[in-house]
Length: 312
Length: 188
Image 1 (spheres, each protein chain N blue to C red):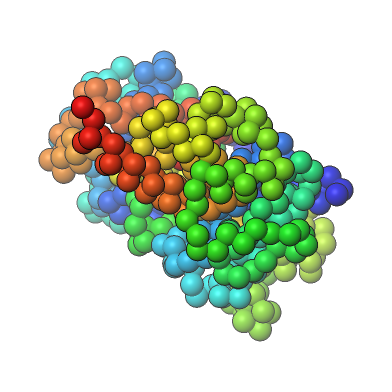
Image 2: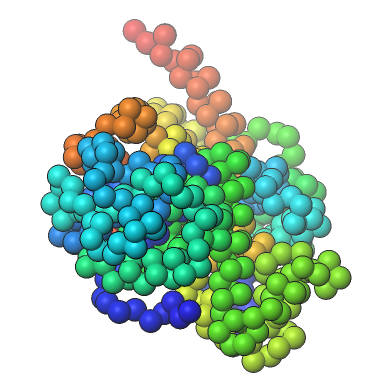
């Protein structure tokens, strides 16, 4: 499978991060709302299968169409797009009860990716839902803009590391598969102790050292592996600084460059609306978060980062 | 120092290669704190990364900091206060024994002068009025802004000189507050 062959000009964003309850759906909706306000034609795709609630953010309580038809009846993705009350935003609901993310077959997955890429939109934004299942990771990897959302707490950070490490591992495997080294990565990883390999970075270094011409390929392909970090529900400057710390640790320990693209302050109104499943995206621009979302989206697009508080 | 070696040190402190001295100080302080302790950012990586690795990163950060200070010819080399673990910079420079004596305005001035830093330089870099910095060193408290602003200025001043900003702000503000409590009620 070649992920790089794009059939259209649009841009795909994916929002993941491992842990549930960090606000991925909120961030997905907000990014979409901001881009739509800028005049982009946006389609949101809810891949949080089994826990889908993206539609309720837009006041749709029971979507008439959902991914169920895609998985069970072979419906085309573009026929499942539902309009919202906001200009420029439509969505595909993941309100699927008969299937779970890990039951999606390989061919279904490929078909899904093909059709996501063909959706008629300038921006497709995918809400990945929780977890690090390989189907979730693969969806993450098709995106042009990979965004991880976390909250300032240790479990979320742990899950996020896991999510990024596994995404990277999967990416390395995919790259080498295309060059005919299908089994070698897993083979070495499974025996990593005898190779003296402790982590994904050391695996990549080992591969580069052992097969010199792989090195160039990996360097080239992995240069595109750019993850954008978003900290949600921050309450103070220390929370904001955590993003910089995570970036530092990812680079110094894993050699994985990540971009600290933005943060969103904890906001009681948002939290309540989410819990009560209120259609608050319609009034969203009135909340204090709108400005922070604007900054983070612009940062992602321009490759800029958060300016740290307190002179750091 | 060769350019690519210099870049390596800037990378280590996660800075662009044209970063001013103040950023070098601040970045160093931030990273030193991060890799010194049990941050919630490090904890989840515990199994994959040893204590040895953490210490190695810390050493590299300290090395990068010293090399960059050295590279900035006119930069102050007063770093003794920052190395709380007893690790001494190896530049051989004679250092001030500040010890436990409280830092006063005049002692801050002494440190600055020994570091060969002009007040003008700090004022320019920090975008502050010379007069204000002078008042800090003269302990001309009545000319200083409210504690909340003063704290920020002191922090920047300390960072610029490579002094521990926490200690400098705490000790200075303690004296400032004591003066304030003494003067305000007696005002007629």
